[in-house]
Amino acid sequence: MTATDASGHLPVAEPADVRRAAWRLIRVDGRAFAAVLALNALAAVAGLAGPWLLGRIIDEVRGGGGVRAVDRLALAILVCALAQLLLARWARYVGFRFGERTLARVREEFVDRTLALPSSVVERAGTGDLTARGTADVTAVGTTLRDVGPELLIASVQALFVLGAVFALDPLLGACSVVGLLGIWGALRWYLRRARTAYLAEGAATSDVAEILAATAVGARTVEAFGLRRRRITASRDALETSRRTRMHTLYLRTVFFPIVEVSYIVPVVGVLLVGSALHEHGRISLGAVVAASLYLLRLSEPLDQILMRVEQLQSSGASFARVEGLARAPQAVSADSPTPADDRIDVTGVRYSYDRGGEVLRGVDLTVRPGERLAVVGPSGAGKTTLSRLLAGIDEPRSGTVSVGGVPIAALGPEQLRRQVVLVTQEHHVFLGTVRDNLLIADPSAGDAELWAALAAVGADDWVAGLPNGLDTELGPGAGTGSGTASGGLPQGLDSARQGGTPVMDGSRSQQLALARVVLADPHTLILDEATALLDPTTARHTERALAAVLEGRTVIAIAHRLHTAHDADRVAVMENGRLTELGTHDSLVAAGGAYAALWSSWHGDDETRPSAG
Image 1 (cartoon, one colour):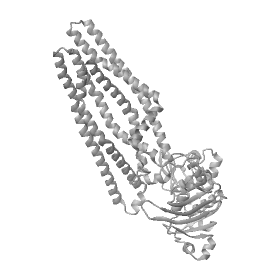
Image 2 (cartoon, helix red, strand yellow; image 1 turned 135 degrees about the horizontal axis):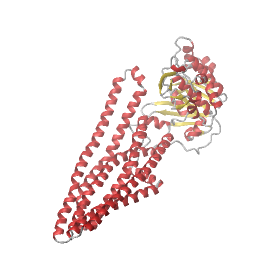
Image 3 (cartoon, helix red, strand yellow; image 1 turned 90 degrees about the vertical axis):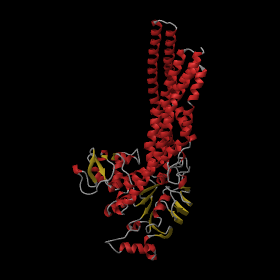
Image 4 (cartoon, one colour; image 1 turned 120 degrees about the vertical axis):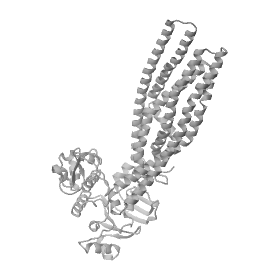
């Protein structure tokens, strides 16, 4: 499977990949796994003594043995039962610790792989698929490692030892037991052929539901503004119906599988009683041995129940493991040992780009951005400005042509190296749970308070941060506030008075300023601004842009200009129309040329009341 399938889902690992991954996890903690196996084996051996000793008691009584012999054998049964209890509890303890350590490795590996995914892959897959894999699927894997795995080991060892004990009593009785269990084997094969596909379909349907719900929640205002409520409800119902059908199919498999198994348990017991009674009549076997064999097979139903239930859970968790392990098959970001750019010059040569489900967005764009230059990219909506910014930032790769920095294709740069060269800042931003300081140190963990305050001052955020209850150490909450008025408790304007446990909630403009302050701390050679100040009011936006320009003096700044004063202040202006670069020059020269830019400038500059956007 490729990076994402036709529905946009991330890859799913093949069964062989899942087995290799499971074996790799076992090898990492092999000593603990071996201890689990050994303890389970000892517990199973201790458990086998009971039926055999009971058979000895029957034979002793039939042979005229006294009370002392019976008491001695009964005491042995008690000791063996106690030993089995202690060994089984020890085995579970060791098994659970093994499972928790292994689950921690799975979680850490999942996070590492997720962070290594290229942004374009994450965007195509959607947050729903990743969220479902990182929550429900990882939890299912964890349950298997902590509970299902140890229980399955215990039950398997017990079942093997029980069958071995029956064979030890009499090979013919053992053969009858195996024949009687063939019905379970047939039902199990029927189930396993269908279960993996069914559970993978159920997982994919769950991802679709999560994606639709997340997209609807995030875009609630858009849904309301464009009257999309009924359409989103219909889409949600369709996704839920698909999810219901997949769950009903897995339920159907279980309702066929388990009744057959329940009936099959009694078959070997009946077979052993019939064959054993015939053998006893011919003097081939003692009555105690027949009773012991029957008790063993009755006891076999318990570990078999555990095995079959756990096998059923393994199909579900195995599908979850395949989805978690599938990230290993997704494209990863370029390794850190990529070539080093000779300088900060950016070259765009013959670039064409089209999205998966659309026409060509960029058509043969050629552009050179000189180190330290301030370039504004303008044009009407749909001209390809944002797509160009994503290619310049290395988020997407061109379908043809090249985008390079310092002579090195941007696609060949590792994540850390790329972020030191180029950073894209959009109106999309995120405030993480934690303090203001935590949110800023993401960009530069080594920064001191002086650097943090300087970065905040550069984007005009130092005043309101200083007004927070604990300054840099104020805890910030998720979500957006109203952005108007003054919050209760003396919080500055732009912080919501609604709190969760006393934690102020940031509004969009303050969150955007924090994101810009992170950019200042990251100190990239080239900064691409795409509506980076769109959530700020015009006065604050202009102040922030000028402050950023002062801080980034000598660095390359590419601004996707939606307010044309940005273009007026730039060294050069690039005009995009229908995916092509149609004009390139200084503000004055383009206005004098009387082309598309001159028309945009005249329209924007001529009406102070409306001032249409450049797109």
